[in-house]
Length: 111
Length: 114
Image (cartoon, rainbow over all chains, first blue to last red; front, side):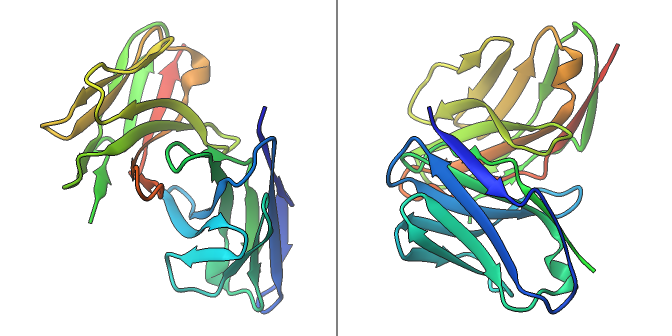
């Protein structure tokens, strides 16, 4: 069966520091991969999605970037964090572009 | 642009009773999927049920069922025999077959009273 992992689970970083969040999927090949952000008490905002290695589409201009160095690995990065980057970050995968399956998420607090 | 609207920010139901959560969407496409996701306090998003637009029959998954009205662009979730573990945020979501990017509603917070 397929599983999706995210780490770290919780992160507290100062403003201006770099960021790297990692997401990996097991048990499938060539999945579509997604990064979402959820602000407190709100819905999900799509940040990036990828349909293959090295293929990244950005939905919202921001201080973040994404990379897909391997088929089942998706990384969310920032060179310099802003206070507004705080939130709950969810990675998801999809076999065909229909339903998506989510990881456990990373709670990021920028201080 | 496609939108998903959940008009009930909060709902409450007595344990063992039935509750219906509402969702409407706006699209000009004919081929799409609709989903309900559950987000418990752990905040992991869990897929509850899916509906393909070309299927007339309403989807069911155990105690969860949907009422899909394509012409009205309505997609409600019915939870029967509510349990304490059903307490969570519920999100309605839409995606087109060709794209795969989920568009979420703002969610409905469901409380279950013992």
